[in-house]
Length: 218
Image (cartoon, rainbow, N blue to C red; front, top):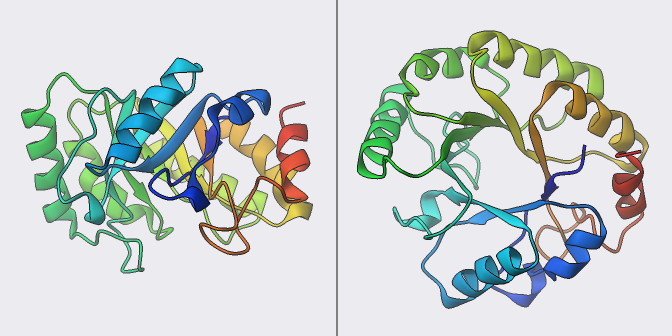
């Protein structure tokens, strides 16, 4: 399953031409929501070429939701304390979700990209995700088999919600089996990240991973 990559349109090192994405079979991009002209322009350019946009309301967003996107992820890695995490207790995240859902009732939203591998955190917040279209999981540092087992545990917790792997990354030798596992278990998947200029060693485009990523859809 090809869905799309994580990008960063706020600087040239993370901006990817939507035409190139379309040629690779990507239907979506994901990036952090901020009130910057480059992000507004990139959203419009993606829509012009038929690429849908998922924006993440992360710590860096300062509460801002970029208008006219196709999906919004509320929070990012709340169950972790990593450098990219907007760390929240389950109670804090439940309140965050309530505020955003009630403030923007017409917008499609998924819950945060959970990354700890501890499904008990999700089990606490899952009953309170009123109005959610789904939720994100980041199955890092796992083999295809290990990640598949973890994602099935998430599925069991809320069978009625779509599961989006909003960040994933694997070495070249496991890329195809991992992508095919996601195609069976997940409803959407976003590679992290598009270019090595965003996070060295994680890039997809212009690396040997690019052709493997395309091959995973065959």
